[in-house]
Length: 135
Picture 1 (spheres, rainbow, N blue to C red):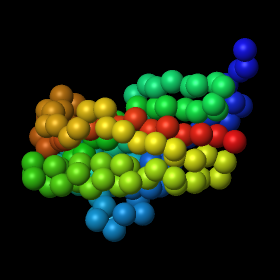
Picture 2 (cartoon, rainbow, N blue to C red):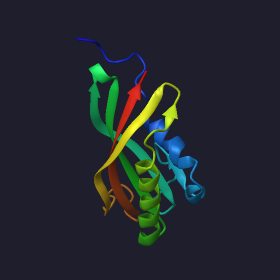
Picture 3 (cartoon, one colour):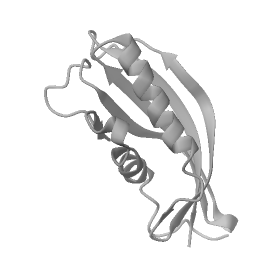
Picture 4 (cartoon, rainbow, N blue to C red):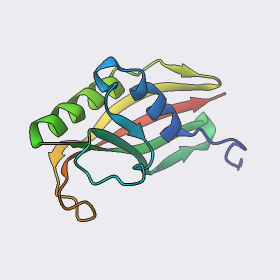
């Protein structure tokens, strides 16, 4: 039995980088954590790893990535969710250093979900499973 790699891919940073390059998200915050003073009414895509599994024999990480998409209103949050989702679904084959995104599937498509931390927020949430092979 082998042990996991010494350098596990930072999938949150990879996804933030992918989404930050998208012109349609240029005026949105795209990060792993909300900035200070964030109240949920600003255009934002917050990226979080929500579990997943390492398949040792294949050197494959299969994280679940949650996208919390916020906007000043519900239609804007929905639009951001669809833009971010489309970018990730199209990321198959993308290479970052020694990491390759080999597959992307939707685990939970965009859905409206009230935010109990930011009570004034307009938030859509979606979850995607990425497969990342490391060499």
